[in-house]
Length: 290
Image 1 (cartoon, rainbow, N blue to C red):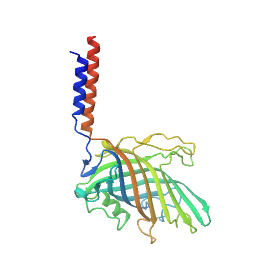
Image 2: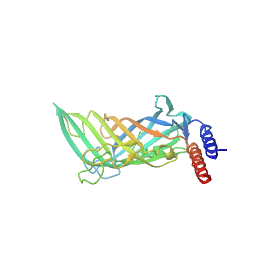
Image 3: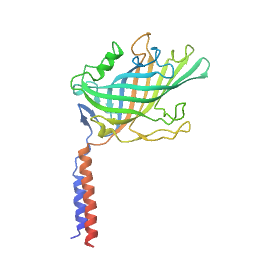
Image 4: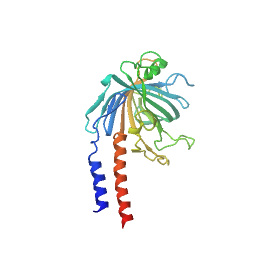
């Protein structure tokens, strides 16, 4: 009997008998697909009032961005909604903090229109699964932040840090992790933009779903002579508008769009590894018998 062929056949049969990759994985009450994942979110952002600054929005170097929000839907590659806010009695809430403004510039783009740009370094993002109905952006910043993780049965779903975009701060050393742009028709720089947008990358550092999303899928672009130092786990963009009234806790409100990639359940990957190990074992046995 050909031991090599038999062992390889058994191992392949074992792999083929594994359950198909689940179309929807559920962790902490949140469903998401294996493969490409697209998420949408509602976001509320402002200068972090708990840190040094002018308390009038992030409009100068040295101020910190703070944000909260919640995921509205999770979709698969074919645009099927796999989970939406409130499903399974859960909400997926977001806290954004520790993004430090490193540079602020204004560029005329034609006529009275200017492009205001702020580049940030650092950044922490925490995403929680908790019972629906807890999150609220009403009231103070402190109350809004508390509502992100203050619900019953709250679980840290993912923790993340800003990942380099490919450029450096003016010191030539600190990597930029978030770019924020605003179009302005006259008015004061950084204070009267009518269309705000942002983009960045994120690396996963922990959370109950980390094993599914820590995939190093996205490559940042090289710019300003700065190489891409690593592969990120998430890429995101956002669009927002300034609040209609001054003095609010959150000076901009908008939406976020997040792309990531989820691997199938670790148990199936472990079985796959065992199957491959069996193939290798069969080859070694055959070689030893030769």
